[in-house]
Image (cartoon, rainbow, N blue to C red; front, side, top):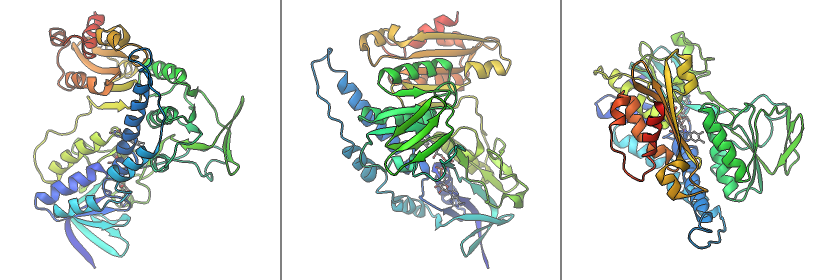
Length: 452
Ligand SMILES: Cc1cc2nc3c(=O)[nH]c(=O)nc-3n(C[C@H](O)[C@H](O)[C@H](O)COP(=O)(O)OP(=O)(O)OC[C@H]3O[C@@H](n4cnc5c(N)ncnc54)[C@H](O)[C@@H]3O)c2cc1C
């Protein structure tokens, strides 16, 4: 016997949780199915704990910068308060009862277990079957994967889900993958005294960003004692009970721990998408601007391939909710997606990179400035003032289509340029603004001047 409800939400990442609550508050009967923790990856294994770690590591770095500028400090890193804060304040010891209660208080029926589509408009969770009369909303997110390296699959390596639960920093750490997750965690642990080596197959770190960002991060990391191996082809991996070894053509790398941060796969396999004629082997589910995969099936979050960010999941949740409720737009637009890498220097970016803009055939102009050359950057002093600002202008339309703000508070300074790209503010108007002296954001004015 199946039970009839209006909507079944499968997976409660940040967007699924939000949408389920909104739909229930709008008066629909909503079942939210979750196989792990309500709230998804972000609060328990990703954004929140890793940003607590980053904050702690920034405190260490700033303390160490005292010498020669404001006296002397002795810094003795200790992972204990970091682990305690994550376990207690952030994740409630990886217990989601508060989130479950919050959702139930909004009128959502939370069902724990793995949801599968067993017919069009039908979801089965263990021995319970629900008929979703309005439709199904998918927010199943992604899981960490490991590259196909000989021997790696069976090793007791860490993923992001393990490393956020460690209670002490390891003596040494190999980080396989130099993308956002690998870069953030490499720097965090290096500052806590771990000897860190990043192993990246691409020829640069943060390969999705501007090449200037990769150069900057590689230079800063190297100065901070992190070993960076780019273009590294790992042929085999092993573990002898106490240490991990990665085999490279020019020799082996060995460390106490191995973090694999080399990609994620969407949780859409074996979900029953064949009932909708949808390919579940794709890297992402194709969605329209209302987040519809097809009639009666919506998808939001990482599985849509529009940007693996919590803010994307929440943005799409609001749109999918309006679509399900039959309300009006505005519908989804992805021309101004912000992304922040919480390294130090912090990397903010929005919209297109220079290469992406050129690939689109745009007639572009770029403007760049160095943060150390800005008034606040010079006052701030080195180390700790590294960074740059880069603007990508569509010269034909006279608007910015992309920007990078790398440096102290880079993610915050991005706000101004995020508005400019989102609202398509004419570059000529940005040039007439008054920029406060001596702020980091004032460097944007220099980058605008550099546009010509
Ligand atoms: C280490 C790390 C750091 C990050 N830091 C940031 C950051 O600083 N800022 C940022 O914006 N983003 C960050 N991200 C990305 C962010 O975590 C995700 O984009 C975010 O969680 C949104 O994902 P989602 O909504 O697609 O679903 P997820 O958060 O992945 O949640 C999906 C949920 O669906 C459940 N599920 C899956 N299949 C089923 C099923 N069949 N039945 C029932 N339940 C199911 C899962 O158990 C999970 O709880 C980070 C990611 C990582 C790995």
